[in-house]
Length: 181
Picture (cartoon, rainbow, N blue to C red):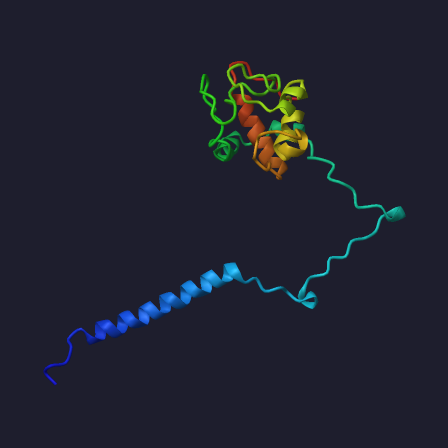
């Protein structure tokens, strides 16, 4: 009995842990290799009402207007929302351009009009006009739908209040803010 291995319990525990790790790894790898198909009877059926003449449902009509929300918008919340933008844009006065143009003094500026930024897409350059409250609302709702061909990869802000808060914050980033509607 005295020549028993003093590390036997450690070896057994290590063997059990190793077997568990191998089983977990095999399960993880197999989930990438094999994707079981779901039988049709387990799928949810979504019924859509047919419109007159069998036409497709109405397309997205765009974002709700935000002009009425701007006066009571939460500027602090708008500033927090810029964290989603900060990886590509800078917000300080005189701030350098990033992947996208610096956004100081955006409201009221010409589209594709930031002097130091040279990487605007052809679609953005062709837009023309200024960044009004209405245009910013449409762009921030779905950038790729508003400017088809934009280089901006952001999917947009679906919540009307979030867009109003963000635009109200962008308005404050100016030496001469555009008056509220």
